[in-house]
Length: 295
Picture 1 (cartoon, one colour):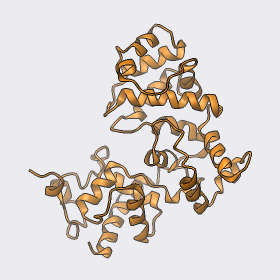
Picture 2: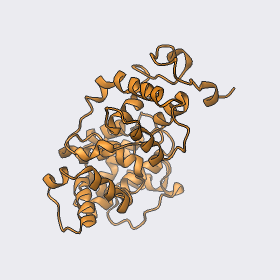
Picture 3: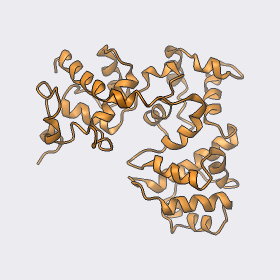
Picture 4: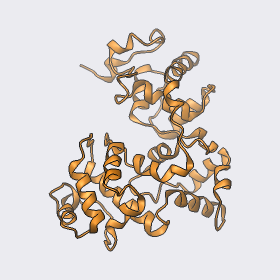
C-alpha cells in the first residue's frame, strides 16, 4: 500500500479514538494494582473483572495472593492438578489447606462470571506462582521488581523512584534487549509486559511501548497497510517508520480501540462490512474481509 494512504488510515483510527485513549493515563504509584489487573489479561480472560472479585474478597494484593502458595515447591502448571474447580488443588483450597487467602481465592475462581477465554485455569495458576515469587524475592512489589532488574542491568545496588521515572527511551529499549524484564514473570511475555506498564504517564520512556494484540493484528490484515511478518518488533518498527505525530503507545491503543471486539459498541470498525461503511477512510483501505474470513 502507498505509505501516504497507510498514514491516513492509521491517523484516522488514532484520532477517532482519541477521547478514550487520552483518559487512560495511569500512575506509577498504582503499578502493583495495574499488574494484578493486566498481567494475565490474555486469551480472552477478563482479568479486570476477576480483579474486582479479588478486591471484594479482600485479597487484591500481590502479598496476599502470593501467600497462598507458601510452602509449595512446584511451579509448572499441571492441568490434572489445578485445571478445574474440582481439581485436587482447588478442593484443597476450599477446605483451608492453603490458608484463609486460599479459601478466598477459591471463592473468586468459582464465582467468576466474566469471560474465561482460553486457559482460564492456567492463567490463575500463573498468577499465583508469579505473585508468590514477587512476594518471596521482591517485597511483594512489582515496582520493586522493575527497579531491581533495571539496577542489575546498570550495575547499581538500587535506583530511586525519581531516577527510574527519568530513564531515557534509548536506555529503556537497551535494557529490554539485554535483560528482558518479563523473563522472570511467570506467564508474561513482551506484549503483555508492555501492556501492563504502557499507560503510566510519569514514565516518559514508555512512548515506544507497543503490544501486538489481536486487534492490532486484525487491523493490519483488514486494512492491508502492512504485509510483513506478524512479529512484535517488525510490526512495531513499521508503525515507528510511518513518522506520525503520535507515540507508538498512542498508535497502539488507538488501533486497539478502533477495531476491538470489546469496544465494538463505541467503535468496532474493521470487524464487519456493515460497520466498515461508517469508516471515513474505507475508500483507500483494502477491506480484506474475504481474505480474513474466507467462505
